[in-house]
Amino acid sequence: MPYSILLSMKKRHKTAYWLLKTEPESYSIDDLKNQKVGRWDGVRNFQARNFLRSMTVGDTILIYHSSTKETGIYGIGEVKSAPYPDPTQFDRKSPYFDAKSKVLNPLWTARDIKFIKKLKKPLLLKEIKEKPQLESMVLVKPGSRLSVQPVTPQEYRAIVWLLKAKKAL
DNA sequence: GCCAACGTTGGC
DNA sequence: GCCAACGTTGGC
Image (cartoon, rainbow, N blue to C red):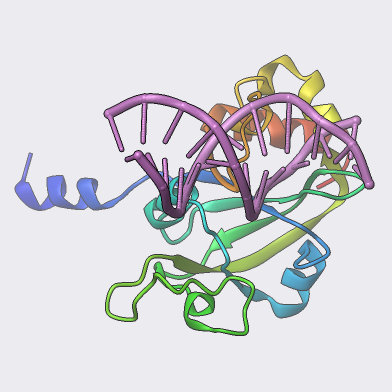
């Protein structure tokens, strides 16, 4: 096989899937819908940050509402930008300010996320917990609190199937 | 609002 | 490097 084709195959990658948690009181799927493209910032956990960094532009995002009455997946987005330093880490007035982070060596990362759609009905956490196909999700792993987490293609397919079944798409 | 589970910090 | 204390997350 010609080297140029090998190169192009290497560059082409499959879309990956991720789940991003947010507290709707501070930033909700409706906020993202209004903004069309929103900055995903305030991630202050190293593992979550590393997942945020390892995303590829174009990856699919499930938007999850946490710490609310009806926790669950509320919408879909897409990774819009490359990773860049989270500006809130340098903002003394921000709750996400981090004195340990230096401008020349930023600790924390943000990305822009494009709104794709808001679900007609959310896929609630309790529904996710009921489905054997979704028991592998990081979301339902005991003690897991990761705010940025990978979703496998199988899990994503199962979620889409469930959303179609309940006419939420 | 409670609290279990987890991550981070800092004394030693 | 251990681990107690503390802070945070997030479901309930």
